[in-house]
Image (cartoon, rainbow, N blue to C red; front, side, top):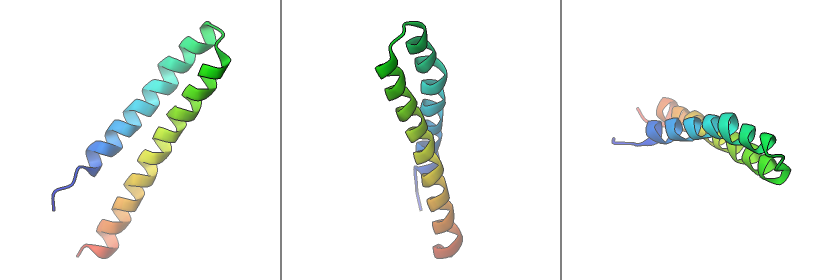
Amino acid sequence: MITFNYYTVLLLLISGILTLSFDVRIYVKTNMMKEKKGALITGWLSIALAFISFCTYYMYEKWFWK
């Protein structure tokens, strides 16, 4: 079975971390509060989707694919 789930999880995780570390810092320096809030939501949503995707794929592999 060929899957790209690990790449998807890795890309979501890296993009979430980069968004939280760089974009939020830039928006705080320039005093752009709406953009900061949007970047925070986007970053944490990306990390949460990576975690959910990894967990569901792990459960699928562990319990249903034998």
